[in-house]
Image 1 (cartoon, helix red, strand yellow):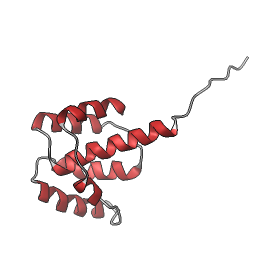
Image 2 (image 1 turned 180 degrees about the horizontal axis):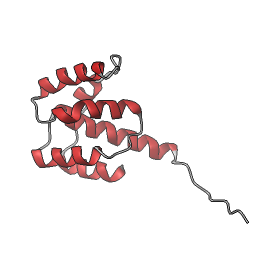
Image 3 (image 1 turned 180 degrees about the vertical axis):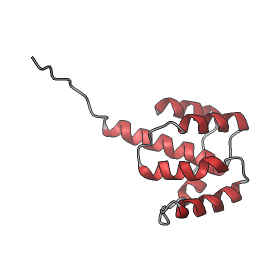
Length: 113
């Protein structure tokens, strides 16, 4: 006898909240607003994260080796790396102007992932 397993799809609201959390976490990395320990923790956690949208994955892969650089260097290098990855039209600017979360907020956002 076959049993049917019901798998509930992630709700749109959950997906939207997850996307918003990813955006804020990436903004914190882009703007280098976190202390070194929190930054390392965030990069380590996102390294194994399944991003909700491809743009976030691409940005993280371009950004992760640069997180210890100065903010302006990060911005210039991310744009270059994203282009080298084959995504010259990826708009990274919003991640550099969004209000980044605090270290405490980062920990709460990580729980949403």
